[in-house]
Structures are given as structure tokens and as C-alpha cells.
Image (tube, rainbow, N blue to C red; front, side):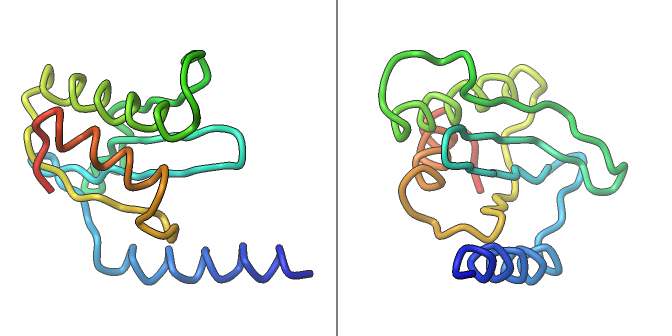
Length: 115
């Protein structure tokens, strides 16, 4: 029962965040989702309602979960710089800005993306 409440509360937080956070073509939204096992990140243009590209840690074998999240952020920053995107809006998806979510943001910042 408690896990259902946790999921419901996260969805409510995410809805509140999404009322404020919008991505554009010049400044896309970076959406982060974490499951118990994997980490996912997407770059989304909300005006066109398109996912520009996405990445996950399925194929990253070395390191713990936080190190994998950092690698996701760095490789996503490389992909964004190839498409000449240097600014973004960060959407934490209702999760606390802590641990793996914060590691993705740190990887993006070290890759040169501003948000």
C-alpha cells in the first residue's frame, strides 16, 4: 500500500512540475526517469511534441548506478552539442534532485549544457 502512495505522490509532483517546465526547439526539456534498475533520459521539444533523442544505461556495464547516471549525462551532453544545443530545461520527473538524478545533471553540466 505504501508503494502505491509513493508512486501517486511522485506523479502528483511531476504534474506540478510539468505545468511550469516547457521545452522549445532552442531550449529543449531534458526528462529524467529512474527505475530501481536503470536510468533513462530524453531530450524533448514540447512545441512540436517530439522526442529528439534518448539514452539509457542498458549497455553501460562498468560502475555503480550513480557512475552510470553520470556517464548518461556526459554522453547526452555530447549528443546535444552535436545538434548545436547548448541550453536546456531540466525536468526531474517528480524525483528528488538527489543521487542518480543529480548525477545526470552533473554530467550534463560537465559536458557544457546550461540549465
